[in-house]
Amino acid sequence: MIGILLVLHGSKVPQWKEMAIGYAKMLSRDFELVEYGFLEFDQPDLRTALENLVEKGAEEVVVVPLLFATGTHFLKDIPRLLGIEGNEADIHGKKVLIRIAPPLGLDSRIAEVLKERVEETIRIRT
Image 1 (cartoon, rainbow, N blue to C red):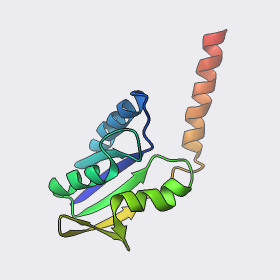
Image 2: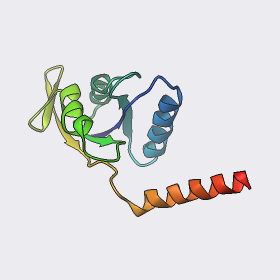
Image 3: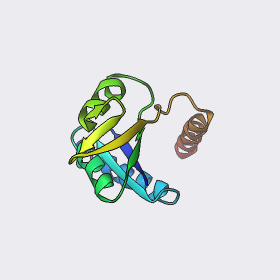
């Protein structure tokens, strides 16, 4: 069974956790096992979220970073915090295949959302 792990930066601002919960619910429409974890500040941390997925039956995990670009968090922190060696993590003696999806990057669908936010803001001010 495949588990989906959403990765968010985290913040002391509660809206970050609300966003994580919301995206997890949206993805749960398409995938049975979805968890979220944070790089810092919030809970659950990435390792706890990964362990939760494995406890629920995930044998393979696709990590989905909600990041715009490749950087230190993507290249170093996510693999380190998840305990990835090669392409696996050891979760309580069980080897679990981990695949990390690319960051969001440039995408016309995201640009469309940005355009909508600009237009909404212009309408509010006029």
